Length: 451
Ligand SMILES: Cc1ncc(COP(=O)(O)O)c(C=O)c1O
Ligand SMILES: N[C@@H](CCCC[NH3+])C(=O)O
Image (spheres, rainbow, N blue to C red):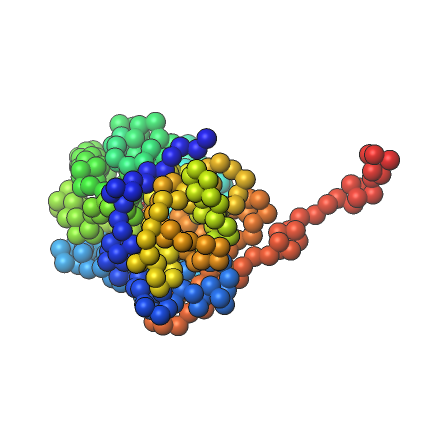
């Protein structure tokens, strides 16, 4: 049995609340649910389902709002989008045009970012296991900085940089032992989490690193966790970092830069989401007087509300409970099955807002008991085969976490921009999946075991 998802019919927002809190969504009496002004039924008819939709204007709006929060405080900050949350070339292009760099976690992300025209000077590389080849590529492209996550990685980076005849710029990613007060599986800055260098060890290590010839430490980095909703853990983490900067300087070393990581949460259900102004305020208060180059690495806050997953009802199944079986599944959107996360689920039809509702378990077709998007969730009582349903706020950690489990190809992706829309990733076919596989000739040549 999978754990029940935290739907609560008594307190869940109504469809009207979901619309009122998401400027990108509107309901039209004739066309039903629109995203950034485009009827979703039109896209479904042309592209099929399941289909990821991204709104370019929503992304631009959020990118500008985040920047504005820091500008309003006269606090210069480098903005690095955490592209693990959404890595499509179109997304990266829009954010590049908005003046963003990226935070990457792999060589693959580096290639994607460079391909989208992001300058190496706008790329920061965090990650607990960077291969030699990935570190070499980072050094050769001369990216802004490598956030080193262990003593071992620091010395390995020095060796690889020496072999390349270069000096690598790096920051020590510190594990500050702060509880981000979020889901256990998306906390990263507690003692015992695999990320970063223990903060008690980091100050001495900074001094040792000064002796390395092929690494130049520029500062410190931290990332506390994801979907953080309150100021407290940010403040605690950044105060710890500020103390460390002072200690390192007191020992005679230079600290030029502090990377504050990501983590800013959003409202999925009824959370009181923190504002960028809160983050800017906490950073100004804790790190603002240190005369360091500041940067942040937001992912979810920028990308989650820019996306939805459009899906169609394959079947309704009467019983106890009654099920709605969608054509999207956990292989498309993994978050509910991984973190029991709550996503708004809305009918697309024009009468969706006014029809009487009843409680359903909303599931996908994958052969896993955990392939459940929501339990006890309100949808129209007359929901039937063929109806379109939208899963909201899936722009972050949505398409990027898809798999092809159960031979379910990757879904199509569509970008909407100012009333125009286009397919930005073709639906994968089963033929594509099979084409990537080979069967050794010696196997096909073998005789059948059953004679
Ligand atoms: C190093 C680093 N930076 C930034 C992020 C982005 O986090 P979020 O999407 O919560 O802003 C992550 C993901 O948790 C991360 O590991
Ligand atoms: N994948 C997680 C976030 C992980 C952030 C990266 N450390 C989610 O969907 O909430």
